[in-house]
Length: 110
Ligand SMILES: [Zn+2]
Image 1: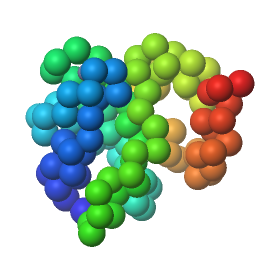
Image 2: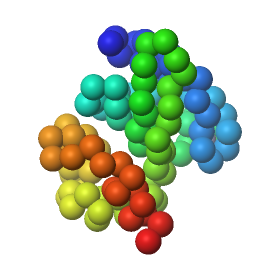
Image 3: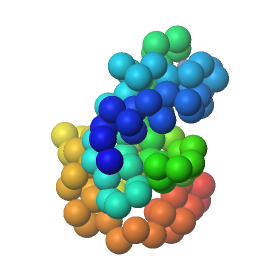
Image 4: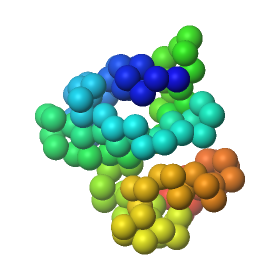
């Protein structure tokens, strides 16, 4: 799937902090594992940077599994066992990730 297509789809979702729609130019595709895409989005309205995980299929709207703000990323970093330099390098994350999102993100609330 084209990255430009992914970005257009993701522009239909809203910033979790202020509710503003993301701009296509504010979305960066980090990587994907089949239909599961990881993106970094920067909100031009409230200047919050989010890491978004979403299931994207061509024939439907993207299903956002999670979006993490920078503060949440600090916690996520510990959960995933990544260094600060690696935290946004989702390629290394994807390499070791076993696909169990419910387990990974249920720990967030623990
Ligand atoms: Zn915002």
